[in-house]
Image (cartoon, rainbow, N blue to C red; front, side, top):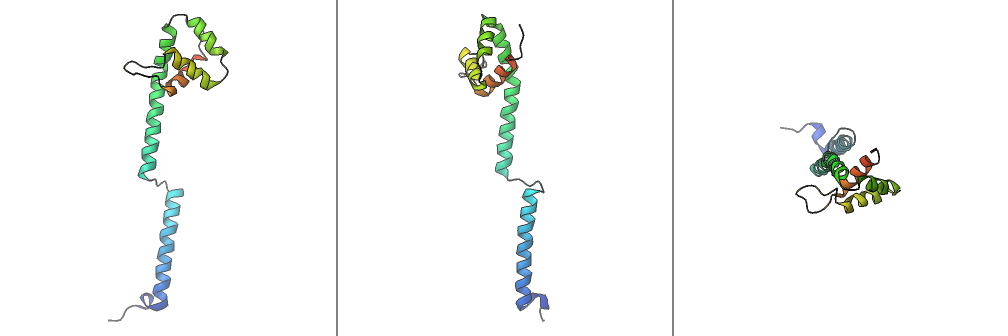
Amino acid sequence: MELPAILQGESLTRLVQGAMAGVVVTIVVGFNWGGWTLGSTVEKTTKERAAAAVVVALAPICVDKFRQAKDVAANLTALNKISYAWDRGTFVEKGGWATMPGATAPDYGVAGACAELLANVKL
């Protein structure tokens, strides 16, 4: 039995080269425009979204703790005098309002979101 001409000599080389080029193009198109992702990318994105959801859920609790604290008006005035957002988050952390029940330390993300929400609070 004789092999077809496409599987012999120079034709076989061209066939293998074409197949390899097709694989490379498929991979490039799949990852760039086809929506393919690696498992590590999906895991990283999932963790980031979960952390953001926790911050969104806990920030109102922080605001409530702030509003129930002593000298809320003085604290709010002091908070509004701080010009940089990260310093506002630090102020909320130091006040203890970003430490959630059961936690031993404040959460910086919650503190930042809390300070942002408190910037719009009117007493």
